[in-house]
Image: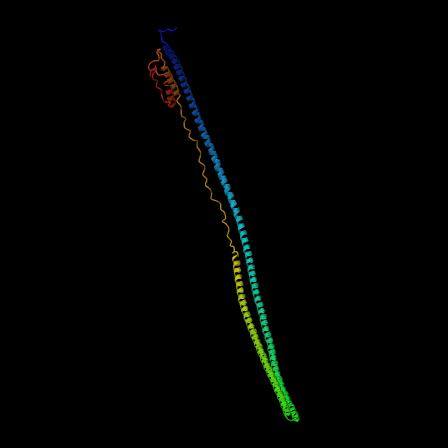
Length: 438
């Protein structure tokens, strides 16, 4: 029943709480002791495992060292065997290569000698061809010069023949003009003789006519005298005298005109003759000029032919010199392209065996050092558990009080003791407020 005067609700709750806290402290103490025991057992197991691992590691190290030594021994023996095999193989190969190199060297030298001989043959043939080409070129130049001489001779003969033809033609022209001159002079002489003869004929005819006229006049005057006397007779005489005078005057005038006409014809004949003679002289001068021109042309042609001949000779000499120079250059180029006489290069040195290799045995392997395993304290967890239980029990109120003065709360030192036992096995927990004292 509820007693209002008895303990109040707070006191009852505190009592119940204290009882529960005591139960919890007991359980914590038991748990701490059990944990200490389990920690001690675990530490003992860990120590046994570490010791067993150390022994296994030591055995493994010894086995590895033994196998390493066996491998190093086989490797050293194999290296020596491979070295001797490779040395013998390299020496045999080098010796075979040296023998083959000797054959190749002799073959290459023989090839060079054949190439050198072929080069000399080609060069000699080329030099002979150069000589033949130069000789043919010089012969062509000489042939051209001979042809030029022949052409000049024909040209000179043509020029001389033309000059001779000019001389002959102009000689005929001179004779023709001289013939013309003789004909002109003959014509002049004949004309003069004809005119002179005509004048003489006129003069003789005039004299005869004068005499006939005088006779006729005398007869007429005699007839007039025989006629009637007196004036008729006188008139008859006068008339006959006048007729005679008129006849004589007319005859004289006629003779004078014929003489003048003959003189004019003679002057014209002389003038024509003079002109013809002058024309002949001009023709003769033309002939002389033509002869001089033909001679000058022949001389000019001769100078031209001589100059052409001299120029052609000089050009031919230059061409021959150029041909000789070209042949020299061609020979020099041919000689420059010739191979030098090959020299035997000699053989390579005969291969020798390499020096003996010094072998060093592999260092013997020894087992690695295995340190002793670190041992855990088996008492530290137990002591720590006991310390935790003591701490838990120290917080209980055995006098029924409500919480006890100065007591530590449950688990106040459990964590600290557990920490110290793990981190530092040599740590011994101190139980403050324990009912058993220190």
